[in-house]
Each structure stands twice: as C-alpha cells, then as structure tokens.
Length: 319
Image 1 (cartoon, rainbow, N blue to C red):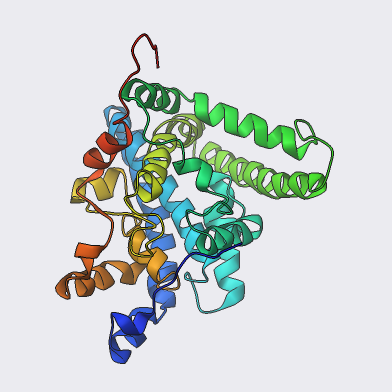
Image 2: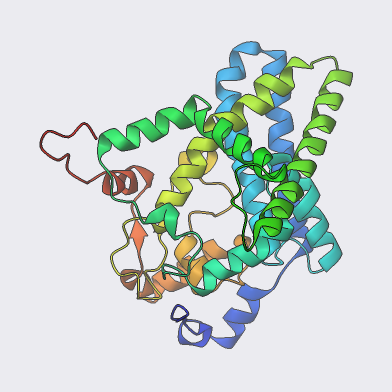
C-alpha cells in the first residue's frame, strides 16, 4: 500500500503563521455546534409561526443537518474541543447521532481516506470513481435524493445490517453489524428525543415536516454535491495539491450547500489537522503566495456539477 503524497506546512507558511492556523479554540469549535442547532431551532420556530416559510426552512435545515455531519467530521480530527472527552461527546451525541453518523466507526474509516486519498485503498474512492457521468444520470440521482429514495435506501440498509441481514458471512461480518448498531441505536434515540421535545412543545408535526423531511430530501442532495465537489473529476490524483478540490462558494452557496468551510477541501487534505474555522484564512495566505494556482480549485458548485456530468451519452443509449 502506497500512502498518498503529503505536503509540509513549512513549505507554505512561516512558523508563526502555522502556530496560529493550527491553534484550536473551544470557543470556536463548541460555538459552531451551538450555531448549527441555533439555526435549526430558529428556522423551525419561524416555520411554525408562519407556515409559508416551510419551503425556505427545509433547505436551510437540510443544509445545517449536513453541517452537523461536517462538525462530526471535525470531531474525528479532534477539532471541536481541546478536551478529548468534550470533543468526542459532542461529536458522537450532539452532532453525529441526530443525523445517523457514528464518530467511533467513522474516525478510523476517515483517517484511512486521508492516508490513501484517491488511491486504491481509499474507502471513499467509490464516491468519486464513477464520475464523470451523463447529465441524465446526474438528474436521476438528484431526483432520487429530493424524493427521499436515497434516504430510504440508506436507512433500510443500515438497519438491516444492524440486525445482521444483508451481510455475507465472512471476515468482518461482526464488525459491520457492530458499526451499524453503533449508528442506528443513537440515531433512533436522538430522534425520539427530538420527537418528544417537539411534541411537548405542542408541534409534534414539526419533527416530520421540519426535521425528517429536510433530512430525507435536501440533506441528501447537498451531501451528494459535497461528495462530488470534493473528489470527483480531479485533474491529477497523484499531486497532493490536487487530490481534493476547493470550491469557491458564494454566500448563498454557503447558506444552502456548503456550511462551516466545507468547500475548502483541498486545504483540508493538504493540512488535515487545521481546524475548519482556520481554512478560509489558510486559503487566503496560499492565494497571496500564488499556491492556489497549483491547487484544484472549482469556480462554484454549478461549474463542478457541469464537469461531473460531462460524459457524453453513447449513441442509442438511454443513460
């Protein structure tokens, strides 16, 4: 197994800059968790108060649900708090469990992704390898996301694995069952707490309309867009500055697609221990030194999607 090539911080930043960029802050890490739930809570309250706002609340909440998953990812890197117990507690129960993500099983899986990014041993390679696809294929995927089909399939398979169904006997069977249970049980518990809380507030229906529906629709779409933008159709997968893509995001895209600096993915792979709240600053420093000209940079999510759906349709094909 050949690990992916790495870069050295000293090749891009002064020692003082690196000390600042790599410094972690409980205030900023925990504050992001509070912010994510605060946005969800405000969006729910406004939609309950004025039901016509439900159409706006669904994508806002769906994007913050992605934000919770992003913060769980940050916890996998130890970036939510310098205190390990707080970092892992927040990562597993407050941001991971409500959206069905398990920090315990995700961390080793994700660190393997970093170690072997875009190599045959990368466990996330299947997310990017099929691209580019045809525009029609992309439209079908988006339709399945927005209509809840992707969510249903994922949860069905996850629950089946937790019960031992759908897993072929052999090496790793018990580990897969345990990993599925570690995700399913906290997910169900957290969602029962959410349902109970909203029911006690007299708005039980908000759980289904303003939590479950965004998770089953918009959240699935923006999660797919994130996966495509981060690693699909790269120009040089062996170059450590091009093994992931940074996507320039407008303020509107940050609200509805890419929360918490998730669009700075090239910087994250170059320096994976940088906390997410320092990535934009790292990007500006790299840009000022001309390094971004060598990096994989996408000009907005629409341009990345066009590249991902650039495969021509074969003559006589229905793809």
